[in-house]
Image (cartoon, rainbow, N blue to C red; front, side):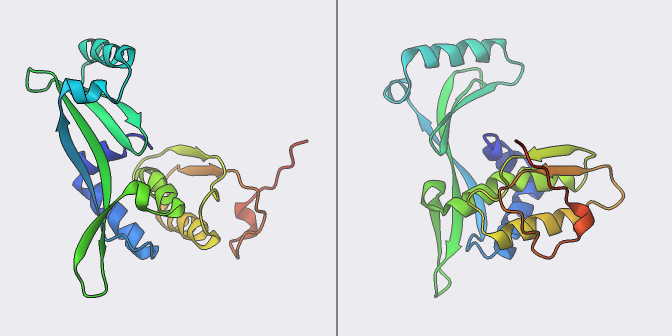
Length: 191
């Protein structure tokens, strides 16, 4: 979910929700931060081809929002002119953990497990489903997720959906429902 850092910086409730869900899922993550580092244009030139930088500048000039970004591994490189001057930033999400004696430390997302990263990618879906009438389609929900985390995700959705018009459509290669009600699932075979 490429806009995750925007959610973390712009919505304090989402930030609390995501950290709480990750704690409840026993991922070891206690908090989330989107950390920004300003870069010079020369530094960005060492990371991105010139045509990508030029395209970002053109998009920024056409955009109503004063920020454009491009994914760069687990980070996002942003061009921002909200202050009236073009400035480049590298933004990465860091996960806060605690060691055995209660000291806090941060890990970059590249150092987190695939399952934690996948669950974090799905956080905006769960957050949106709490209050918006919307349908999400998730391909291979079980990719990189332990079956118990898939179950936790689906149970959370079922618990919070209430009377709303909300739906999650998922695909999976695993047909075990893990004890969830039969009427919730339709098996389709594609030939």
